[in-house]
Length: 318
Image (cartoon, rainbow, N blue to C red; front, side):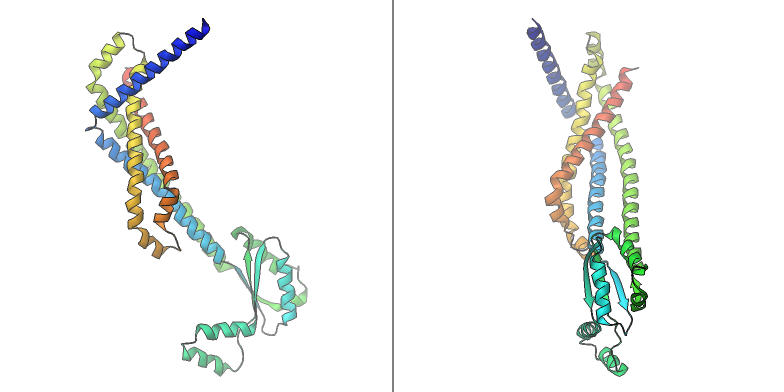
């Protein structure tokens, strides 16, 4: 008896949902002309959301490459003995924060300068006129991540070394690199905040337009709704098709927005590659396009569902 009742209830719910879905599809097709504005605005909104994903990925990519090139440069006094410099190098390599330490001797620094300025006779002549090697030995310290450079710089300035070692170190160059990373992190945060504000504005606009589009659809079918309520249809049954219609707006908009990012990725590919370090927008789209499409789909469905639900609820509560 209970099994038969459960099966009957299941069939009733399935049939009811099927009717709601069918009516929603019919309503979406009938109102396709007035739905264009809602779909256009929602597509723009979803493209802004996708733009946030793109901009975040690009800036994070730049930050990653900058962090990999940033290091702590340790310069030694001219008369520093190589044996003592290598002691400092060994001490640094024992730190858990340090990834690599590269030693450049005075002779190697001079050779690097001459190689770099091989076509600049004036620069080479200036070195010869000095009469001695003006370059200092140095260590380039690469940390395991950018947040550890401060600790390394502090270690080099601490009393961990003897007075003799302190006299060896002429300069620890990190402040400029630290400022570059701080500025880039600040830029990323600013872009994300500005993008979020713009996205929220368009989300509100999208909800308002979809809300009014659904209200117009309700007005068009007001006689049918009145008949449905007279014969005992509950609010969920009346509301259902319009919510489905709003969800369809979101699905169509997400599909259009995801497709539009393909030609956009191709168009801006060269501009972005020239401006940023090895960031290929087309490759990013091919690798992350599906994931981004899923995000836009969920956002679109949410926008359509919320705006249509609010619109129908206001009408039914009159």
